[in-house]
Length: 304
Ligand code: FO1
Image 1: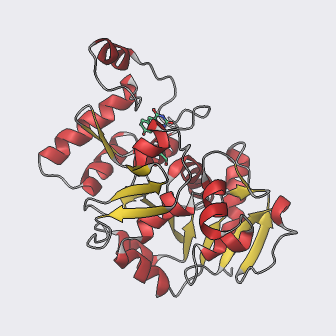
Image 2: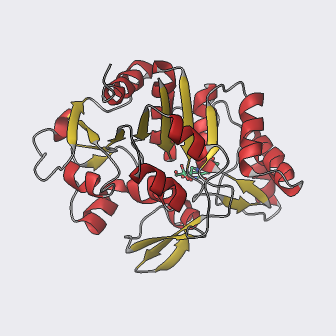
């Protein structure tokens, strides 16, 4: 079976591990709206979360970055008065250095990502949603901020009034994205924040159009458990921007784009207004078995 997963954030990356454990042919399309320039380096946090998770190198506890990380460069940069609000570990820095140099030499983000995946021994295809510049901006009562300034710099403390994707209107899908979607037997939206992880991918019109025109099932996995986010601001954003945190509110973020929503058992009593099929299972990805079981529940949407 060929599967394409649209993924952002740490939950998305963990889900991708489960999908890759369950099926052979997986293409992951990653969010790039979170990308940020730090200390002169191009950082692609969501692509890196996917790379590290699929390489088995991710820090399970922290969620982002690499296991066994050290911080000597960051500490030294701090002593020199360099910017340290966005923490780049010593091992992680190597990826940003290699990526930044390749981009400056004229490579596309998808070419660099493929090169990094090969070097890290990652077999599934990982594609950025677009090779064009696309950046997420968050409008709050305190002003509008680039995504990472709001998320990391301000600890996502501000309520969100709106989300905007700079460059979204003109961005085209990265090479290989539409081909993978056209060849897929199943399209999956990972249990990622709908507003800041999946929406930037869908802001690329070619990707949204391909989802609208799909001839195979598309299944989203809700990032909420009992109406609450496992981590991060998804529940607060849904409450404020969609008017609630039920499965119907999550599905409304993907109106016309999905055929089923995977929801946690703790939300099974709250399916009022849900206009797509519910697949009820345990969605907390505590370990590799749980990740694989969740992926298999979503894969069950394809008739055998
Ligand atoms: N998240 C934080 O909360 N604080 C950080 O300092 C931080 C640094 C960082 C460096 C590289 C990287 O790949 C991810 C990093 N993240 C950090 C996570 C990142 O901000 C978020 O997980 C995603 O952008 C949300 O999807």
